[in-house]
Length: 240
Image (cartoon, rainbow, N blue to C red; front, side, top):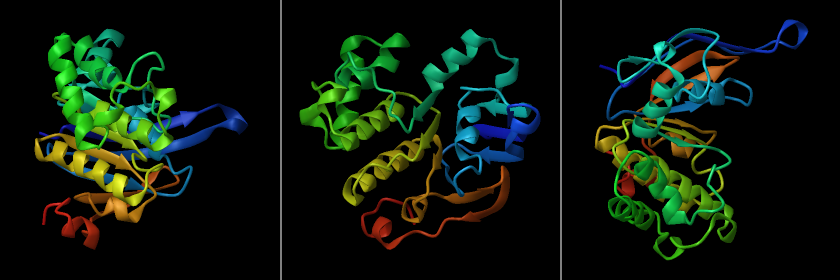
């Protein structure tokens, strides 16, 4: 069974002369353990696809299933519980809580779901360590650089027992070395059975995926198997 299934999803914003068709009959299935990259020009519907897949907004029409659960048939509380337990989301603006340290931000979803503080913080420190942020764990977001905040957001998205990982330009503010560390963590999550969807403008980042879909004017214009880039193969980042 696919972890994410979108059937004929359409999304419209506005009405009349201001109406914008962000998505037009999009079909997408992502299996457990699969990483899919979504590419396309600005305004092609990439971010709308992610927010709908993550239950942050509803489609105008169509169906969306996560782990077999029909998102449109769920109550607000049920979708909030699903997001907290099963979906990791990396936002372009990071969405870190200013009053919490890096470690506390990463641990928060686990604690909200009933994990003990001690276990949640241990998991948070492991995720931060994989991204070279061990020494930043006690710092607050305004004490971190943009790239560091982005890595904290990625750590928060992959920590715990997530089944679906959605990332909007997860390496956009990072240099190549840190971008590679982020993608290594995303691929490691997929190797544990997580289904991943990454929106990107970067062909090198897309080369870490198993499959690339191209959006244009809200429609899937093409879908192809990704071709591994030389850097990812040399570093063992993407499986052969």
